[in-house]
Image (tube, rainbow, N blue to C red; front, side, top):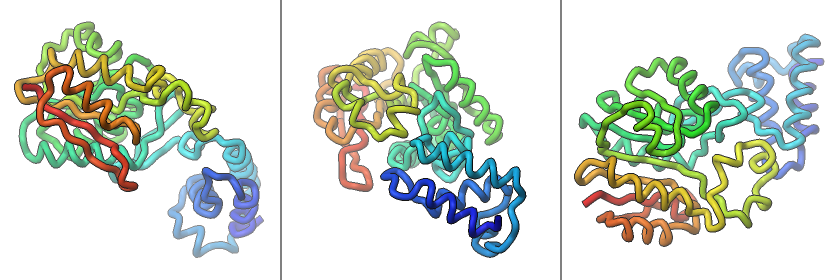
Length: 283
């Protein structure tokens, strides 16, 4: 079977799925299996594909047809221009989160700051900040061991030295690892899906991504309350607490920050014009 025929086969397998881009995804999978750039697929459509590669390609595309996320199948995801190793047990980085990270990078500029990232996942937020703000020291914490493992793999992969990861439950992770720091910035993209909304998520999300990283309690706000309350003890004077939020949670998260005494609270929109980021400052 030649390249073009195999691409057509892959497209047929996932055609009509709401979450898929059949041609692009087929090309991405085959280019990775052949260890070539995407342009190779376009130029060498008449090249014969060896049987083991063909079989592996079909197997991957069949899994994709069942709703298995492409990033888990390829074990990689792109974020902020960096390529992250991804596997089951960590959330797949989303483009909307780049708004959060870019805002922090622009805020830091060339200043010497330290940053705490709560809920590191693959390390996408922590390591992107560390990469683009080399004067910054980044601490990442997560309650689960898989995210800590994956974040450290990505730290090594990206050759980043100014970030460290620690396992533990929210701020207790700092105490458990004897980290006595006050932070200029505390950032989190916490679980914020409401109980009633879990079943409405796309198949590839609800059936494959870790629910512990999605479920935010009955109203989706459990972690905003916990983190906002605890953050006051760990932020420097005028330090910033910044969150990614659900599209309909802006006013509620702002209220949580107001009640805890944060000042100059603001909202940033995402590419679709929805509320996506809430941030405020310790008085």
